Amino acid sequence: MTRIIMLGCNGRMGQMITDLVSQDDEARIVAGIDIVDNRENGYPVFLSLQDCDVEADVIIDFSSANGFESRMDYAVDKQIPMIECSTGLSEEQIAYMGQASKKVAVLKSANMSLGINLLMKLVKEAAQKLAADGFDVEIVEKHHNQKLDAPSGTALALADSVNEAMDGQYEYVYDRSQVRQKRGKKELGISAVRGGTIVGEHDVIFAGTDEVVTFSHTAYSRAVFAKGSITAAKYIKGKPAGMYDMADVLM
Image (cartoon, rainbow, N blue to C red; front, top):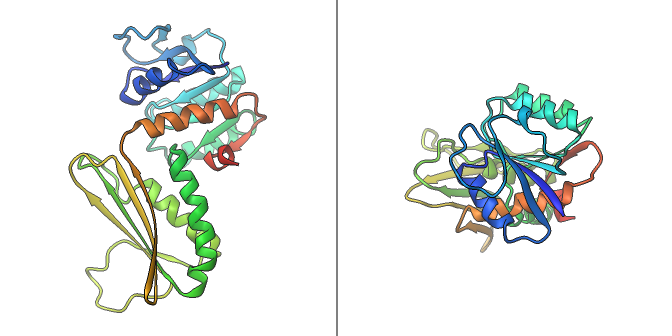
C-alpha cells in the first residue's frame, strides 16, 4: 500500500487523483493540503504542509509554485519522496529542487502521462534513424483556448528528446512568418494551436522524400495525467535520494 499526501487536494487535478485512488487497492490518500477545506474527501485536510502530522510514503504536488521551497524542505525533513507536478517553477526553484534531490527522492516530468513519456522514447529512437537520414522534423501541438504558454512544455520536451538523440544539432524555430527562405536542414519547427476545449494533442512529424512518419498522442481527459502521477507515486516509494522522471517509471 502506497500512502499519499495530496498537495492541492481540492483543485481539479487533486480531486481527480482522489477519485482514482479511491478505486485503487494499492494506494491510499492519507492526508490532503489545500488553502481551503470545503470538501468531504474522506481524509484529513490541512491548510499547510507544515501542519500535517500524518505518516506517508509519497507526496504528490499539484499546487502552485508559491511556497515551493517550504514544501521541498518538508519532504527532505520528513524523508518523504516527492512527485513534483507544479508548473511555472523559476530557474531558482528548479535549482532548489535539484539540491533537495540529493537528500530525498524527487520525480519531476514535463508531462505525467505514461503515453507521452513512451512517445519521448520512441521519437528519440526514430530520430537516430530518420533524422540521421535527412528527414525534416516538425512538432505540432494543440491545446484548449485557456492555456497560457505556447509552445507547451510537452512539445519542448519532445523536441529536446529528438535533439538529444542528434547531439544537439537542431535549432528550434517557432515562427517562419517573418522570413522568406527555404527550410534549413537543422531546423526543428514547433507550432502551437489554441482552441476550444482540446485537452492536449502532440504530433511529431518526420518528413522525408516521398514519405512521412508521424508519431501522435492525444489526451482525451486530464485523467491521463492523474493516472500517471499515481503510477509514479507507487514507483518512487522507498527509492533512494535522487532526481527521477517518468522515463524511469517506464523502464
